[in-house]
Image 1: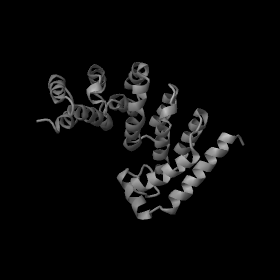
Image 2: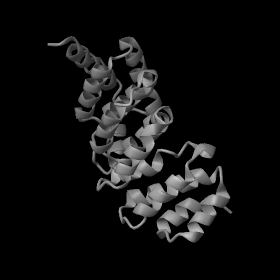
Image 3: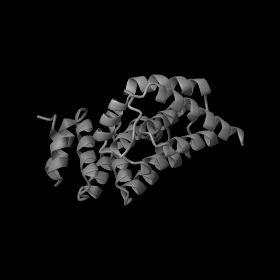
Image 4: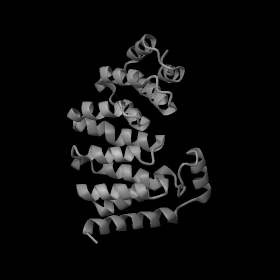
Length: 229
């Protein structure tokens, strides 16, 4: 077995053993219910899980690009949801070593085992920093996502700027929102409202004017203006 596969196998083995040791069946059932029973869980609170996963990540150190690609995809194949959280955080841990090609692995994570928890975690930990590091990738990648039939990619095209504050490209944000505003998918409409609400913390007048001048759904408009007087 190649070295990188051995390392991947050992990483997952040690992570599984550590998570199983502190698993909580009652909390696992509650977490599964909260996530509409789409996934199974070990039942570990986020802070506790991060202590465990961060320790193992630091123990193994930096993975090469090919190793990281293999390991993340293997983590995504694991049935327990916590493995996907670790995969996302593992990518973020390698930020210093990101290349443009990372977006391919990131997109794999967006479209597989997709739900709001993982997709929004990716937006926060990976997409925002990635597009700041490789701004030339913004238009070709996010435009394709925005015009995709996959609504999680659509959501990601709207949400990647959620922490950009004064650096937000409002023309791009507005364009992407208007392009998908008639999509009836709840998670797209929620993303529109959330992205506008976040930017409203920086520029409330722009958000208020945008909502007034463009016909958004009630859900999106309410979310956008929730904290704006």
